[in-house]
Image (cartoon, rainbow, N blue to C red; front, side, top):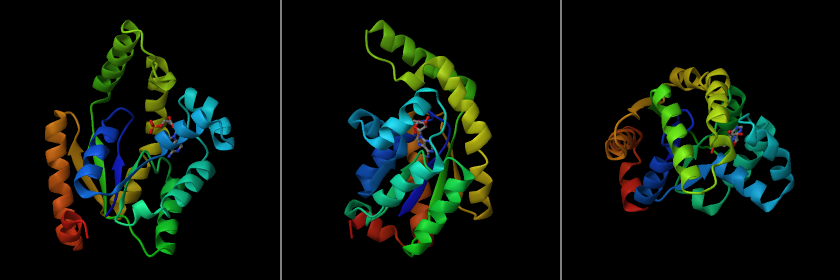
Length: 208
Ligand code: AMP
């Protein structure tokens, strides 16, 4: 199973990806996490990405496509994988299709997590205020002003990826405004239906 979790920053993609990974034993590929790890490790990629990430902008297509191309070759991706935060541009979506085609693979489904963005901004402002009050560090790009920039980048550069997948009839809409448990129920239903339609449901549930 190859699926894309699509939606604006702070929509809950990471939380739901962790659940999907646990239930179906597929790999969770978050380009944001991989980039943060590269920054922390001080690698060449990390050095190139750091300032861009802190400013809430997108790292170059070339860097993230390279990261994903390497990562999907790892053995834990054999049963399938969840893409979280990738693709974020139409160029990335095209490159991903080419990459998958060359390995005789294909995206099964794109789960679009829909959220009310005004509510998201409030959520992130609250999270930053709570962290500060508790003396904990706030992720630099979760600073409310930077977060608003990330939302703008989402609109300008990432939202146009959706029609690309709508044309391929791959998109399922998930209401992301509901409690975590209810969002999860919708995801399980969408994955069960996709698994039946595409003939991988039993493999998915049995670990084969
Ligand atoms: P995330 O944790 O997914 O919100 O990603 C954090 C930051 O990493 C983003 O704001 C970007 O700067 C960078 N990033 C993550 N994924 C991508 C991507 N697919 N393309 C470009 N930049 C990315």
